[in-house]
Image 1 (tube, rainbow, N blue to C red):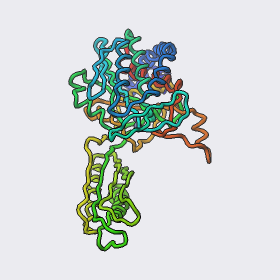
Image 2 (cartoon, rainbow, N blue to C red; image 1 turned 45 degrees about the vertical axis):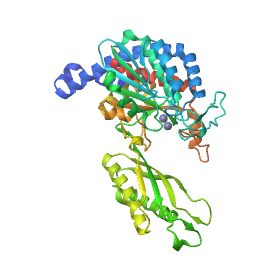
Image 3 (cartoon, rainbow, N blue to C red; image 1 turned 135 degrees about the vertical axis):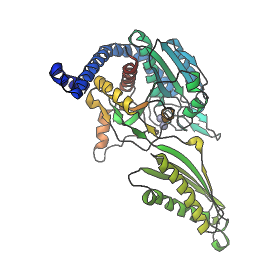
Image 4 (cartoon, rainbow, N blue to C red; image 1 turned 120 degrees about the vertical axis):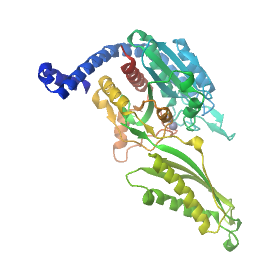
Length: 457
Ligand SMILES: [Zn+2]
Ligand SMILES: [Zn+2]
């Protein structure tokens, strides 16, 4: 893309366009970009050589992480391994920043500070991929239950690309200037880790970054490809717990009881009117009741029913309205049934703000990625209603950019698109796994290029 654009302007004589101010500016800008592009182009073979040299090491590191996943807030061994990896290549590493978070700093003269973030935690999922290096790990979750543990969200791939990028950049110190701030973030899956690191002084104890970068695995796009959203990428995420209260009794004598199951059913249906009847149709929002628990037996009316909701919005005002409406609807249903007031809890600790990619940083980074991968392999995609707490660094005033790394075989994606084709497992599925080699190589290449594009000489 950048090369084509430069080619066109280059064909016009500079003197001719100088007569028109705007065109002159465009030509100068194109020349600057041509220079930057050329500099980046020169560096690409060196980056690729370094990745090739490191590859077997990175693949075993990836398989190590895949086989040793740890749940959110339990990332003890994972953070210790990342600390060791960064120290070996000359980063100054501080462990235990916001729980098991780690911060690696590599100073290399005057220049911008760039944050590169990986998350570290895995999920309570029993792996079913059948891979030779599948996880067999078990752990105790926060409620004391024994659960299988799996890197079903690809955070093992994120860590491997993060280490690979750190190795490339540490080895190319003569080609850039500035400060690298490589952070290993705990507890992304519970939306807590970024907040914990920030609360522990991430941007006070360490250099405040000028830019923040991160990648996330994507199961729906092919390896060798990356996708991104310009501006809004991911949604606000809130968790709401509702306890619907009634009055228990015999199932044969409802007149003696207040049935919380009927009230809960009414609430669930009424909640769907928030999005369909109260929200501006051009503002996306989702209210999903993901869990309902109440009662023990056919003929007993229970005392209460518990609901768990996930709420997704993209604007702060819509978020506040939706949360208020949930409480209003739950209380109104109880009043209508002469029941005690329900308990509605919104856990602020589980709030993940919407992720918005910085416009200028996106405009700066995308041409560089297109240059190394080819324009067709870098695609814009619409925002999705998932969430990611990388957004919190953006809310601190840091221009951030997160892109999505294709990880799945192209032929499987083509097959899934056919009628009756085998569907592709989504992230968090017990069947999801990235194909290691192309995913690692593209992840390290794109992240190294994205950083060098900001700090390169
Ligand atoms: Zn996840
Ligand atoms: Zn994730």
